Amino acid sequence: MSGSRDLRLFRLVLYRLGMMCAQFDDRDCLLQSTPSSERYALFYMLAILAAALGCFAFAYLWPQDLYMGVYNETGNFYETINIRGFCVGLWLLHICLYIRRRRHIGLVQKLLQLNRLCSNKANERYFRRIFICYVVLALICLMNYLNGYARAGLSQIAALVYIFVYLYSFVVMCLLLAFFVCLQHIVAAGLAKYNIQLAKSYSVAYRRHLLYQRYRLLDTVAVELVACFGLLMLPIVPLVLFLAPTGPLFLVSTVMEGKLSGFFQYAIFCFTASLWNVPWLAMMTFILRSNVITEEANKTAKILAKIPRTGSGLDRMVEKFLLKNLRQQPILTAYGFFALDKSTLFKLFTAIFTYMVILVQFKEMENSTKSLQKS
Image 1 (cartoon, rainbow, N blue to C red):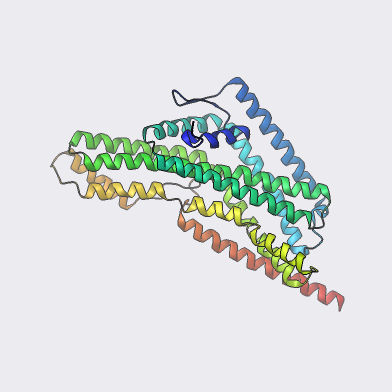
Image 2: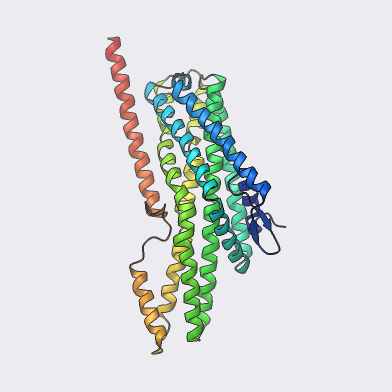
């Protein structure tokens, strides 16, 4: 069986990470919870909560142990805030995934069945490329964290805390982002199928039936997909926002201030700092640029606008649909707080740049204070 069929690779990793523990019946395309999978989900969640709590306690009780010798006070303080935030984020994600696990399983099962109906080779290749991209970015993260924290002048325990929290956060959060994008493409494939049938159909009754099926599918997106995965975006996006300035700040605070000795050390730190947050930002850009559902949904309006009027009840339905389409709100949102589209991507990068400027100003204030104290 192809690894990309029925999102098999994603389901396997999600199961191992305790985020969607259900057995898949390939013949009937059903996801079923079993007593063993329920136990695994519970024990895995408790283990991760205990590990995250331990890391949070370490960062809260001994923050000085997490301070890097080559970094300044501003950067070190900001790092301790970030690592506590990621510990809390892991808590929230795993608790939410466990409490709402049956709802998630039901949604994914419904979309996998839709994928069977609208299956095409292009989507399977796309799912495979997404998974490969996710694995490559995870390996880049691993390389960055091992190289960066090993050379940061930290104790072994502090380095392990940093590596575990950030690497595991990337593995979990970005897997959810990649899986969310795949589900969006399944919905878009379903909408594309209805659009093709709508354009070819000349039957009033069949067109009415297709519009009803389309409405049900978009209702699934607006309610279930946003409720299940839009809610998970709420902690992920702010965490990425606060993490993103750390790479440039470290570059400015160490390399550009002459705190390093030797060309090799300069080159290593420059390379590591330049790639530090690239995997996170790449995944966020990937998901926020994925407007396939909105684009496919808008094509329906163009098709209906070309349909000749018949003087039947379908005309009123089409007019109401076109009027509603003009006032349409973003289909995918982070539980209604912000849209998951390109406009949010621009706002995210603007906010990252703003935070970076603020942090650099705090760093300059710290340097000025130290200079005054010395004089």
